[in-house]
Image (cartoon, rainbow, N blue to C red; front, side, top):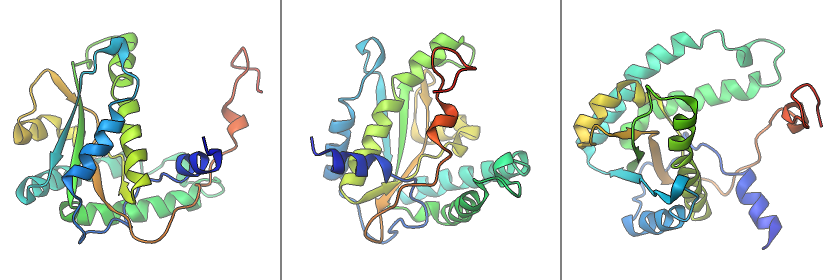
Length: 217
């Protein structure tokens, strides 16, 4: 493998919000090819119980955007005092930029060419940790592979979950069965500009533990 290209893809696949091209259509055959790649991701017990709902209908996108905005109000109130927003926190500057781009997406979500809602068979809200990890672990690798495949083709996406506050309303709108769990909503569009840069992150060593939690690498 060309490690330079692979590393670049992995370190520059960003959540794209402000730089989504709202005017350029995204062909469904391109999305289908990316999903074929995503379906090669690992899945628990080889169940392959994943489903992806693609939404291009303007009226349905508008309803999903309204649910998203309603949830955003409650979310912003809950996270007003998040530690990464405090003065002196190394994440503050980037977090303020994220909030700005999130606000842009909030205002324009209904204009994004298509929404993708990844789903997985099963419900785990009343299950234990093992069942939850198994179900989500069976869909999240595929969604990330989808985002990587899109990125490689000049298409951006953002992993959002706010609409899940009103998951039942979204399920009714899209006809999602009651035994299926929605896990995200990806606004998908070609991105503007040439490329992305790696994000500023806390040092990896701060979160790596060797043999025991108290022992750092």
